Amino acid sequence: MKRLRVKLTYANVMATIAVFIALGGASYAAVKLPKNSVGANQLKKEAVTPAKLSKASKIALTGPQAPVGVQGPSGPQGPRGDTGAMGATGEQGEKGEKGDQGEKGEKGDQGEPGPSDGYFGEGSDLPATLHESGADIGAVNVTPGSYIFTAVGRLTNDISGTSNAECFLRNTSGGAGPSVNVNLAAEPDRKIVSTVWARTVSAPAKFTLHCETTDPTSTVLVDEVSIAAVKVGTLH
Image (cartoon, rainbow, N blue to C red; front, top):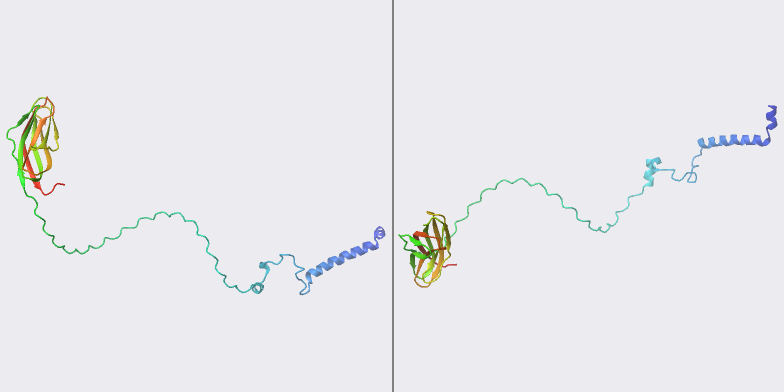
């Protein structure tokens, strides 16, 4: 104790008393703050947050709703969107009722009488033999007018090898129709040839079926020939 008293000075005592007063004053301020003693200067920045406000304070701080402002200009049109996927096909609807039958139309005017002239020519009873030659087989005679001519005949090979021939309708006054080529295998190969020709004549005329061999080694028999002509109004 004697050593401690020697070390104590006035400055040490006053410093110790100041520490006790400071500690005691801080505790007093924390517990005994007077009413309305805390203002803006005592609050730290952003110390008071909305969560710490009472409901009444929030209502007092909220002003009335402002009027609706003027609508702003329309913005630019956006880019076109992608085409959507095709939808599923819908179910087929029910079949509708059958409609009423329409009224019968008026009878048309009777047409002009068509041509009714038909000509059948002379055939050939005996076969014509063709070898490096041609022949007119059968014939039909017609008066002036437009006609459809048809001719049919049978060709038979008369040798052991092959034979070739062609047949066509011919106007004895001049002109010939399209030809039909016939290729015959070895004897006794037979084929039917038929040909058609449309022709207009201004005078009486005679039409025949003309057949001929097309190479020097062929020999062909032609028989059962028939020729016909049907008169028509106009050829197109």
